[in-house]
Amino acid sequence: MRQKTKFRRKITKNYEKRAIFALQILNNFTNKKYAMASQEDVFKKLVAHCKEYGFVFPSSEIYDGVGAVYDYGQNGVELKNNIKKYWWDSMILLHENIVGIDAAIFMHPTTWKASGHVDAFNDPLIDNRDSKKRYRADVLIEEQLAKFDEKIEKECEKAAKRFGESFDKEMFIQTNGRVQEYVTKRTELHTRFANALNDNNLEELKQIILDYEIVCPISGTKNWTDVRQFNLMFSTEMGSTADGAMKIYLRPETAQGIFVNYLNVQKTGRMKIPFGIAQIGKAFRNEIVARQFIFRMREFEQMEMQFFVRPGDEMKWFEHWKSFRLKWHKALGLGDHKYRYHDHDKLAHYANAATDIEFEMPFGFKEVEGIHSRTNFDLSQHEQYSGKNIKYFDPELNQSYTPYVIETSIGVDRMFLSIMSAAYCEEKLEGGDSRVVLKLPAVLAPVKACIMPLVKKDGLPEKAREIMNQLKFDFKCAYDEKDSIGKRYRRQDAVGTPFCITVDHQTLEDGMVTIRHRDTMSQERVSINDLHGIIDAQVNMKNLFKKIVE
Ligand code: ATP
Image 1 (cartoon, rainbow, N blue to C red):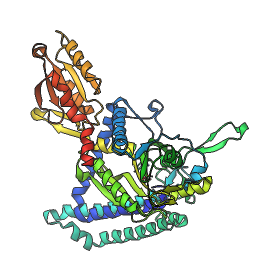
Image 2 (cartoon, rainbow, N blue to C red; image 1 turned 60 degrees about the horizontal axis):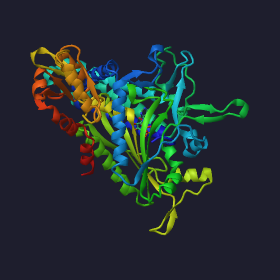
Image 3 (tube, helix red, strand yellow; image 1 turned 30 degrees about the vertical axis):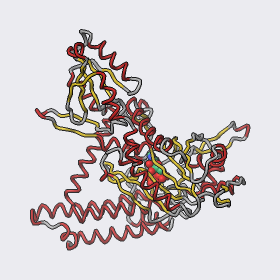
Image 4 (tube, rainbow, N blue to C red; image 1 turned 60 degrees about the vertical axis):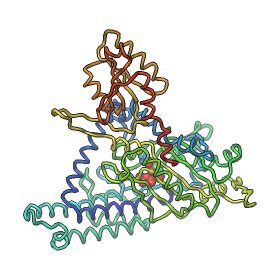
């Protein structure tokens, strides 16, 4: 979550990130370093692949792009739509007590006052007066911490070379005077930093930057402004100035669209507690430091579901949704070991439980989804600010109350990135050949099957078209007759198409085609009449849904 605690929540995360890094140093110093370097490489290749094969482009690239804004290309949009369908149907089809809405991006400005975003949806920023560049104060300090880590790392590398096989890293770190000096300094800095963040102490953040002589990477100077809170919401004006324009915000989360519609949906849908409202839509955050491709964007998409429950029942439902959401992720088959929960130690004042589902990205375990028990904070706030009665009369208890809420909130783009990172594979083949293949879950693949006539003559293209016309009502299909079959296979591997279907001269006689499976590259001869069943068995979402509810 976000408002009020956004600033403080990051602390716990940063703290943990640093702690993990320190642990890595102690545990498996050198190996880890090399592993991380090659992971970075893979990530770069993945970003390039996304562009080359029409998945993700920098926004308005012909004008050199806009920071942290991306467009989805012809394959990206199919994958994204499939992710959204997988989420939407898992909410709406599998639960008779969950309904969907599609609220507007523009909302009455009081919404954001009531939710707390106007006052507290902030990051701490600092400017360098010479370069005129803006930074996140916490990130500058984190980079300073990383410098200590690098120094420790360098000492270990030197010693490893000197001592060869007999080198004991852990022992070296614990006993070497210089390394111990770095460790102590790092710990001191870390403690000050964590305290400053916990206390929301902006003066102390600046003082740390001055004390550690942190300079602007551009100007090289220490000519810093004070640290200020920076609100992450984008604002604009609605109406002409002559009418008296109203300052409004681009929503930083979709959840508030659900809360302000709670009464409408509950009444018109005659919903009984417990029930949920789901929504997919764009959200906007003016992130100060936006990096790591589509992991942190300024315009992104969320899939959120707010589940309204009786006060007192929230922990039961929190556990339920935690487990349900993890099953949803795991059903995709990207590898169970790639997920973990990260329970929040520090909670927003109105929350009584919160956890993240993290996925192992090429740059480490990162939050993909948040599950929060938000008590009745949001509905109570809107009740107070709007003056409307947002109570629910529970006929079973014969009493009225403001419902409690369990929220599940996942970013479509982060989900997209996690799937792409797990799917991207470089393989060496027999005979010295190699291929890049996207081992996407077949249900999410942009194209399900590519139909290929072996040659562009002898009636094979016509037969291939005939097959495509049979399949295209149910599956997104591609047709390709250019280049050798081998090259065509590689093109489909690169976009993750699970099946290639080749039509040859024999097909015209016996109605059989060659179907080639993407991951194993195995081929088999099957009847045209069986194609629909073979493809459906792999790409039908029903298979995943059964796994989730069983
Ligand atoms: P972070 O700590 O990474 O900034 P957050 O905890 O602020 O994330 P939430 O407010 O809980 O995120 O939003 C729910 C989900 O929305 C996140 O789990 C993530 O998948 C997605 N999300 C949030 N901010 C961004 C962003 N800037 N770009 C892409 N996705 C985002």
